Length: 321
Image (cartoon, one colour):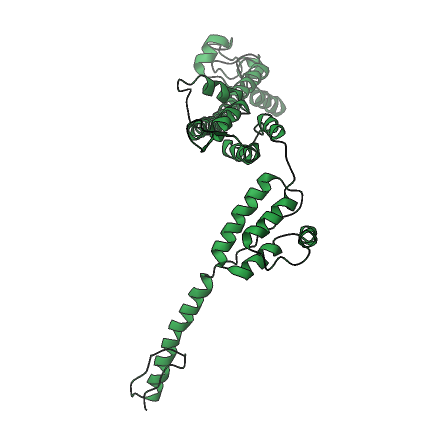
């Protein structure tokens, strides 16, 4: 049979001049290569990047977050020029898009990305009082179950509105002292007073913001581990206490039963029904006594087990006479 090529386009595989059955088997085996490649490609398919959204009356923090998401979207999709502006406008909700169109007196698709971003910011971000934002920042506290990193993220988001910038007296650059303020606000707003006191008592009083995070995280981790350990020890102590109480209850029950039951040797209470010879020697009054009924030792006639036999024997003898 002449050689046969693989039916998949752009594939160079070709069988030799062999029997038809062998050629069919070779083509079937080769087809598995294409199937595996197709499956691998589908498994490695990356999820489509979602376009960010922006609405009216947002804050400066919302705007900063939108800009970050928008840069990531542009980088992932590789869109450019007019398509980029169209997608940027599609990020706006319906009300904001309508206001943009009204303000521009028409479509903005022929504008540059910078002009569109400026127009969006004017309508999307409401004016904020910097001093009010700083007061709100200083009033923020850590929630009960909130980690210190999550609390720090909330603080940093609020600090973005506060504009902690000061011009350098020696040059034209601005000095950003946000991290120093955040460190102080973070310490003041900690929920755990013990960790706060440990931090305030730390020898190094010039820790950076990151060092403060690490210090608090270490303390929180230690307290969580100690809490689990105490719970485990408490459960073990409760279990041990239960076993001790149960054992003591059994001892009391046995002691009570011993005190309430009648001795089978003397008929009295106090030393159990069948005490050991050592106990009977000390406590049982019948110890050493010889029974007149059966002539055996260590029990009274009143509890003699042979009494009934003796009585029956006498009755039989009297009947026979």
